Length: 154
Image 1 (cartoon, rainbow, N blue to C red):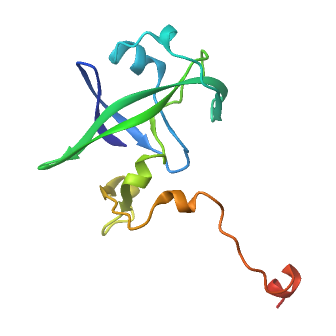
Image 2 (cartoon, helix red, strand yellow):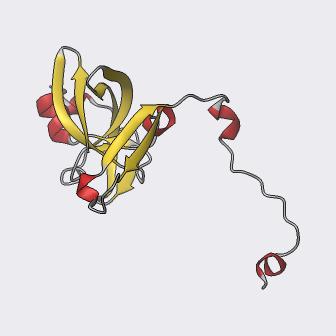
């Protein structure tokens, strides 16, 4: 869980987001968007569907500034969040997915000197890229050297 402050217009709402490496995109619950950020859900444009643990749902997108950090280190990022539009299709918790957060930041989970996972901690720091991500949008092409049977035979 990552403590954050979501900012939309003049509203700042402190909450926590589940950092979900299995989620392609970030998603907020309707309650947060409607009640905390004061956005009228009926004004949001349907922009497709998504599916997850609650099943398939119509979604809209909303850009929200997200602040996070501790002590003297603080970051703010504009993050596109999906908003589920169908009733009963909210995620159990608001999610922070891979795109674009995991591209911009390196996320580590460190256990330290314990085997108790509740005592572990997230370490998040900005990612510096030396190459453009546009070059890597296509799957990697693997050159084959023989058949699958030959490669994996013992």
